Image 1 (tube, each protein chain N blue to C red):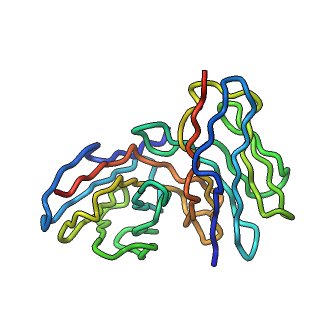
Image 2 (cartoon, rainbow over the protein chains, first blue to last red; image 1 turned 120 degrees about the horizontal axis):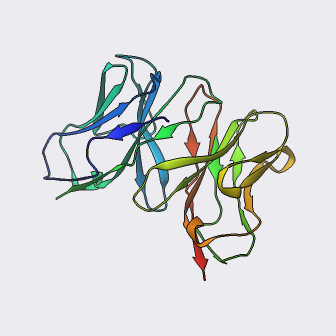
Length: 113
Length: 112
């Protein structure tokens, strides 16, 4: 079974802090994704990566950056956290073909105070 | 612009009743289509997917979905809902090499 593991289920940080969210997958998937989920807005894509050291902006990249130094790990970075980044963050991974489904982690609920 | 729309934000059905969750897509060509379910505090789990062939696809947990090109729809159905089906359901479409666009989600409540 595919396993996508997010390092924290709940995280509380302060405004202005640099925040790291970590995601690891064990299926050798090329593609990895970061989404944020907000009520009434569904899932919105922040960044995605098709390969090591490769990244592309999604629909809402402002205030975020990512790092993919190894194939199995994809990190989301909030450079200077703000209260409007309080949200549920979901990581996913998949094989590169369009018909391959994405596999999701359990999410990190991040609160910025 | 490409989009996926779930018109119903919240649906309540009685246990044992049938269920239909609506999903409409707007793409230049037929995208690959997926339905996911999210239980409280969990990530998304794939229910089923469509990418070609038979327009009626079967998924896990007794769900099925029908692709209708003429209506640009991919509605999710279940003949008899169980209390454990209470969750949020997301429809998604992909025609860009692995990048999904999701609908806003439909929250399902089940009455005893």
